[in-house]
Length: 266
Length: 334
Figure 1 (cartoon, rainbow over the protein chains, first blue to last red):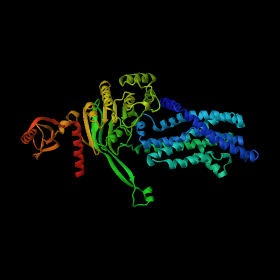
Figure 2: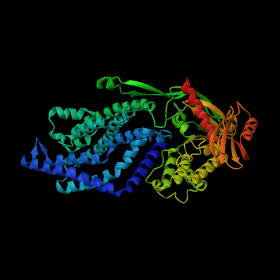
Figure 3: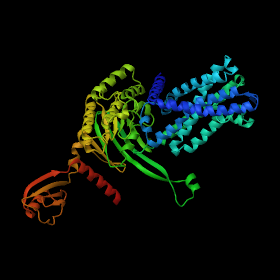
Figure 4: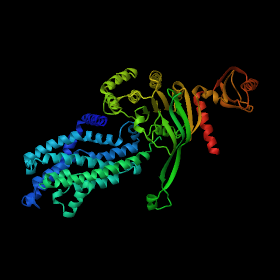
């Protein structure tokens, strides 16, 4: 009960903090609209040149898949890595380590609180724009769609937090995690379908996207394709397995990371 | 007396990689040379419940490291600690409910939001009910005079206001022990006094044990009844603050004012040395291990035509400086 109250209060406080900077919302929306919009226009043109479908995939499905990817990116859960690195480098970590809270939970709920409002805003605006322009894919009318979307969203959040927390925890040993962050982040972007929609991946790359934690953290992008309706048990299962594995790794790393804390002035 | 803090043979060593210029980058990356720094070396002491203790020492003496070990932030290399019945290395969260911490050089408050949000947030962290939080915030607002700025974003507060807010926030859960790491750093004399008075009040009214590090002699003299001096990671003195000047009064100071002017400055007998030589005033230091104050005065009266004399002990700051310098030179000789 205490954990839930603390989580909700952390989210509330971070939302309040966000509202002090309304300019950030505007920036998030502009960045989202620009990046996602340019890619969608390009893919719309490519699909048009190829007669409307590529490898049996329609532009409508691709557009929704990319929309899910960019909306999820607006959540900015990945920023947990850099926040942790800053805590370690500046020594600010000591102000959290002496509170009766779990540092990892606090950081995770804090990120969720920071990103939730931009994500919901961008999500609502983008979904409306897509529904009006390309329409909703038929699979969205299936009874299983929204429950499984919610499930894979929770899984994607959990796995993203685990992946990027592990990267953040490395800062307890190597301090500058930027090179590792860059590699992991690019792997997530590519295998998540940021540059090329996952439906157009070659077979081997698709397998890597499905079975690696980087791709699995972006399974939201799979929900736009028709095969989601029979693939979801396997994909959510893979995601769950990674969550357990990386979650355990994260906790073990944290146990050792705490012992390596070295704060300036002490 | 019930103990708030008990530490025994506590040691903390830091190791860090050092680049070997003769070795290649592969060796430096995979198998770097390590350098070890002993920040705290085999220290033992205890602090009773309700005590006000200053933990002082020069920069790099190991004060902050010790405080951070006591709060469970840092892990000791060896030794044992017991803080309010808890082992900080194993029971960090349980201990956190009982202690408050203030780091003078770091803020724990939410910078963009009004102070009320930070106080309420900390209340939730310490699992207080909404009613308890409201009541405690009202108490602290009155005690610390937070009312005039409680609705302002923390980043817009003056340093003095922020430090009052930091201390208030650390007391939200009525801790039994408060650990303060240089709480008055950067404050003006008025803000320092206000903060010291507040700490004395909470010690008196809420029986909170105070354990603080500071470079400010005023903090030590006006706030703490006991002083523990550390240098190079070891405890070199642990005594009542009132005895600090007495214990180290191996020197007496004498100001001499001439009838007319001091025209020349004679050689002084053993145990006496000039600190200041001016035509209008001489200040000498008398080493009482070598000569008595009486003999020193006699010698000066024989040497000079003097109108006024002022004999005094070293102030606390001078005593502390002597102690630091003594231990530093001893360590260098060793």
